[in-house]
Length: 215
Image 1 (cartoon, rainbow, N blue to C red):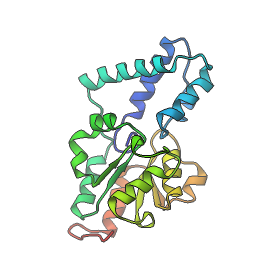
Image 2 (image 1 turned 90 degrees about the vertical axis):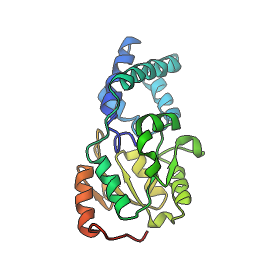
Image 3 (image 1 turned 30 degrees about the vertical axis):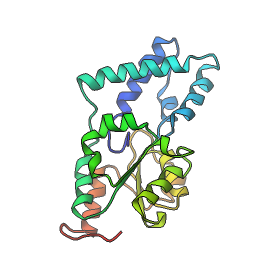
């Protein structure tokens, strides 16, 4: 979701860096990139790894949430360019689509609320035993869709999410955001595209308007 459909990662990076600075530590861009696509419990471990076991992780999380809530209330969080057009493309062709995200349900509703009715399934971190990069989230999404994982196409932006989809046995397309696609991931993906618009343009050539697609 974040970094693929919602253009939130740059905003979160700014918020996290400001919160870290207020607590007397520096969070580099390279460090922030290691959190992307992972569930909160993984990130908590990284925070203690980077800043020491005594670092106030709950306090840091609360500070970040407060800053984000104020920004969301006044400015909102924009969708990533091409997100709505991509979802409309899928809907027009009768392709059921699911959301498989490491984010909590409250964050999903905050950032994608008006668009959630279009999803045939929504799976969050709370719905499975293990978060990304384990396959659980994608396997549960496929189960709820009623489609075998091998017949699903996962669209991801992060290495952790990509590994999750591949481990679930799905085909993978990567549309990266802040984190470049590792060569080991790109080699196993169907394709890597610079934007959702590019993905949609390529898909349109395969599935013209008015043509239903069998999943």
